[in-house]
Each structure stands twice: as C-alpha cells, then as structure tokens.
Length: 229
Image: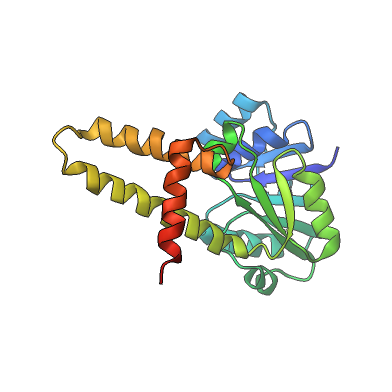
C-alpha cells in the first residue's frame, strides 16, 4: 500500500483517517497531542512524532485550518526533501500554494463538497481535484478512491460552491426561526425540530429527487415565482 501522512485530526481529519485506513499505509500527526492519541487509539492508526518523520512518507494530506496551510508548507520547504502535498483546506487557492512551495514540494488541491458529520454517517461527498499537474491528479484519485466521488477541474471553485450552499441554507434556517418565533406554540424545541428535521430532511429529499406530492407542489410554486419578471 502507498505510504501517506495526514496532518490534522479534527472533525474532517478524523473522518478521512477512518476512510483511508486500510486503503493506504497511513500515519497521522496533530499538534494537539491528546487529540492525536485519542484518534490513533480509536481507529488503530500509527502516529508520527514530528513533521520530519511524516515527510519521509513522501505524500502528505493537509486537513488543517486555512491559516495553518501556508506555515506548514514553509516548514516542509526547509527540509529540502521531495514531497507531494494534498491540500484539503477550502479557502487556500492553488496559486497561493504554488507561490509558497519550493521547487521540490509539489502541491495540489482536493476540496470537499461535503460536510464532515454527514460523511462520517455514510454520505458520499464530491471531491473536486485540481486537473493539473496530471500526475498528481491521478495520485489523488488513487488515494481518495474510498472517500467519495472524484471530479477533476479547478478545486478553487469549491469556495464558491460551499459558500453559496451554506449562505442559502442558513438564510432558510434564520427565516424559519424568525417566522415561527412569532407563533405562540413555537417554543425552542419546535423551532429546532422544524429546522433540523423538516427543513433538513426536505433538502435531502430534494437533492435525491425523492420529494412527496406536497413538497413537489411547493417546488413548482417557488419556480413559478422565480420566473416572474
């Protein structure tokens, strides 16, 4: 199996560690030692004691906050070792990766149209992978094969896609909350259930083309309203 390192075992990092375990020879690292050990013991994955040890594997997945991606690449630049870095952080653009990395460090974006909790529960995310360099695209496809559906193109587009999805969903949630709050029977539990079960369930059903007759009528009315000048 291919040797791969993974940095960052927060929500998404833990999910990826579990998905990749057994598919690649994985070793994980996190600056939070207690979190690292907890995930390692739960999943049964070896840990790396340092970035230097992880770099020896040749391929590293960064599953860290945006602000940490660049500093980590700079750390790896100083090691003067040939290395492939797969960046998962949504808001770090490809041109920033290329400008930061030294000649021996190759970077590629592999960004998720998905949510860590949903993936952990079995949902299949779409992973948009940079289409160049081609040899790295093929590598990412091989590594992430058990994780989700892989599409090649411009991974930076995920920033727009996820932002639009999040903004529209949160707008709907806020509108539901504000609308129901004025009703005498709508306490906090009612509002929470309306958002987390009714609204979220309908969104999933819409995405899967599994709406019932009542919901389909609402969709037709919404589309007709949107077409009006």
